[in-house]
Length: 138
Image 1 (tube, one colour):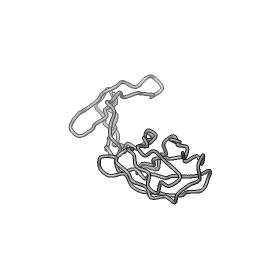
Image 2 (cartoon, helix red, strand yellow):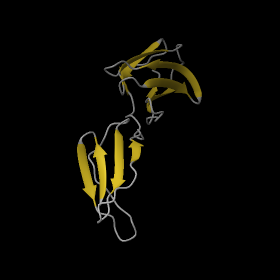
Image 3 (cartoon, helix red, strand yellow):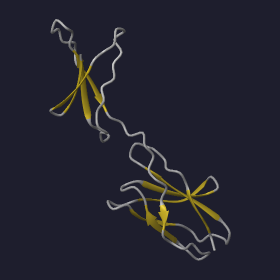
Image 4 (cartoon, rainbow, N blue to C red):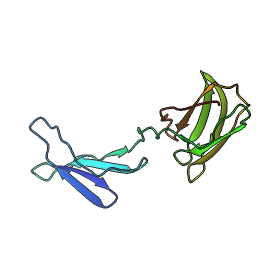
């Protein structure tokens, strides 16, 4: 038998003849500690192995609220709370800022020429990068 523990809750699974097992647990937040140990039919208990949940999920693409014109010097929108917002033209970064605790952001940029395409991404604390939201300067 294999026992996974999160806080005070235990999740139990059986290992197959080759020692393979799968303990099913609910989705956990990044940073959650999980311990795993095995117990054989005689009651012998293995050493405990500790694991930490890591964040591998990229944030959603930012939502841009600003109508970007050739005179625009600030782009606003929403993204994952506390993510870093990056605005690029091609591969050149033209502005960055942090989203607040509600996910609102304001990024200062230099005015861009009409028809320039801005690419906006959000990067979370675990360095996962969202898909780009794009906007064409009007």
